[in-house]
Image (cartoon, rainbow, N blue to C red; front, top):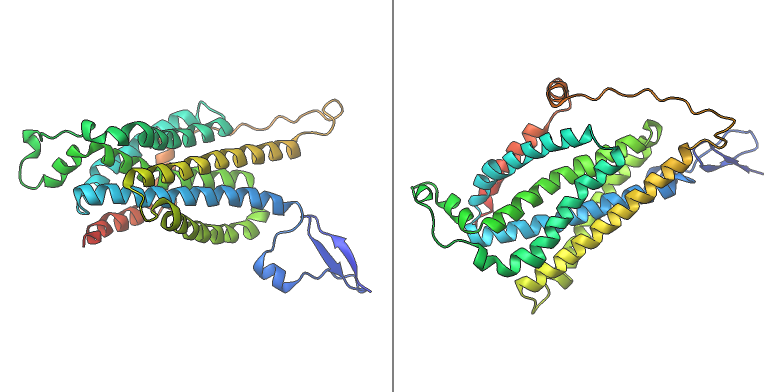
Length: 308
């Protein structure tokens, strides 16, 4: 009769009388994660799910605000003169803070400002938007070809929300999740973890769309009510993200802590040299995986075709 064996990675598999360990091909194809790794994957998958959920809600909301007030053609202008400078400023600021803060603190310092902005926009800015939006356009924006710039100036709070939401869509995926996942998931486990993260990413937009259709934009709900409901979901997801991140970091620290500090002296870990912003840019320029320019170009030229 077959007996069971515990694999080094926590997987329990059947052992036939011959002694050869056999795994279920169906389980390997659908969910090749076992033992204690299931808990870790659930936590990381939850972080990825909430990040994409928030990204979907804010992406749809920013498009609705700008397209209905300024026109779809204004998005291209806003991407180049708003999103691009904001991304450069974020790069400089993140580079400075990454050299001064611990990775754990840096993660919270990166995530918190976005959710604070979304909450303040809903509670303070949007209710008095008419008072904040100027009605007189400066002469410098009255020349031909600057119509969209003038429209964005008159609806500057919506333009600001668009820039922050667009910045979140890039930072949340690359920094809040993938940089964190690459730091805590061993290479041996990434082969099994990473493909399933893609499935989580596919589920979040579906549920976010249903949330908007059935609740946030339900029949009889005005724009202010929809804004409150979307922002409530965004902030709830933000709290859940931070709670899961805190839980995972505690889990990692408990696993790496020595069992008996008195008998087992802690080994001094070699400190990795921190590169300056210029050195980091040189390193990225030599990277064969750099594809951000291609993605930015595609999104830049796709925007004008949203106009009906």
